Image (cartoon, rainbow, N blue to C red):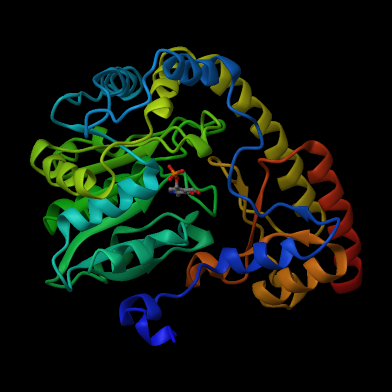
Length: 388
Ligand SMILES: Cc1ncc(COP(=O)(O)O)c(C=O)c1O
């Protein structure tokens, strides 16, 4: 009989994502208002879908070049040049991936020897530490604090450096906090990278979703392009999570290593998705502007709502998550989420699922309809009257 003992020890040792557990519970319940899911509640804009459909109808249903279509790599190159003045060669410095999910894994796999350490700034995307481990490295978590607006300080990073440290993994705008990186902190991180000769893996998947804020591309900082692997993609800003298209940008020797892995692992990213991504990058600006406006309005609704319920909420300037403190209830974040789910049928995610410094907070996604946000706030008001 096949038992668990057949599963490799390394996979047995991996902890399941703290997010999944909640979705499994939610799936068994009725009438739940879920603020748990981390994806746009818009469908992909029609002209972008049409880009994918047209490509299929032209018969483009086979593999593409391993690196992705040249058309898409050129579109990415023009896009980052226009936004940040960054210049990446489409032939040698850009690779189309199956989302940042793949980009993250191949970036880590390309740079880590067994036992190499990566400083992972948290709270962070649930896959980060697991991806480091899957790539054979050791994830060294670097905690942030709400007092520092959940930004990594140079001192906190430096305190965790050892002779095995190879890279720093950052994600701004951040999932789960909505934090963005100020120039002061970005300079601190760059300084640490330079002093200790580290690579920086910068997950900028939420770069377009910023409010009263201008995103600073990490690679645009003086001296940083040569030591940065940029990971981004179409999922969030263009409401294209299901199309599975992302990209990595890096100096040629690093990109070549990632391409080798990508070629054996994936072959090529989805062909119709690549065609849709070209349309998105070339003609999707009005859609991004519209969705950002909508998210911004909902952001105000939810942040003001949490503050007035006695759940002080850090001001998120990016992504589509609010991250209020639930300390006033006296509950742990896990207790809060489970009790809220069972008593009021509202799903939010415990902050500790994203790292130790998320304890005492919960993540609520406002990529949701106004109606759902309002219903969730009404139910939470009742919950706070009973537990506040
Ligand atoms: C910070 C972060 N990075 C990466 C991803 C994965 O994105 P993709 O759809 O491009 O694989 C997510 C998805 O939630 C995310 O929040």
